[in-house]
Image (cartoon, rainbow, N blue to C red; front, side, top):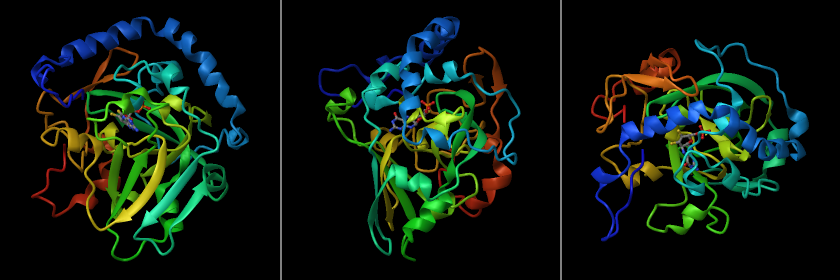
Length: 317
Ligand code: MTE
């Protein structure tokens, strides 16, 4: 996943961290999980002061079940991708610098009437529920997470998109004073992702505000992120500040960095390798165990129909 936009004096792509090294690093981390977990707990405990804390835990929606144990919270919060705070996996303490209350989300583009809404008002207008979802990163690791949130369809309905809108485009905050990596202006900040309206209104598309029965920790993308479990994890944009409706397909952060490796659809498929590694199996975060990867990450019954007749598209990268 590590793609460097090169300036003249920098190393070529093939000299960047090799994938096996990536995996070894995680094996070392799994071994030190207990210590690392304790180290970051004070940061996570601060979530208790969150003004929305009384909304948690929300009732679990039993429709969404897992075929594997939930990933322990400490394994999750000590191995993250939140590149705004650095390119290592241990960004939990750096992410604590992000002020998440108050937080405003701007809704605009091809909608009846653009508006801004405070996060705290948004969560009052929906019913929060807990869902157990698998999460499959394009880097070939996976986890299982009890997310709390609400169907993305509710947000789309609130926005009232015009008939001409085809895509929902989401953006993460942009503040280089808080997020050090955003000072590296050769990366295409802010992090941007998009879905078609049909994807965004699919039952599975979930706007996440909490995890493990509590408000979302900052490192997981507080106060509001996306979960699209049939797609590679990079689609699940964190710390969203803008939701815009557009006729034009957006170019996402990773696609703009390396379009030969990361595309718009990014649906999980074990038979379509990443150009630099296989996607046939995945390492279960924190365990050192591997499992075969499932097409659409096992969610084909919900989403396969969305892609019928799109044979010319690169649906699985
Ligand atoms: N969103 C933003 N804004 N910045 C990021 O770096 N990383 C993505 C996705 N959303 C990312 C992001 C990737 S590659 C993955 S796998 C997931 O977040 C990781 O989510 P997690 O850290 O909660 O496991």
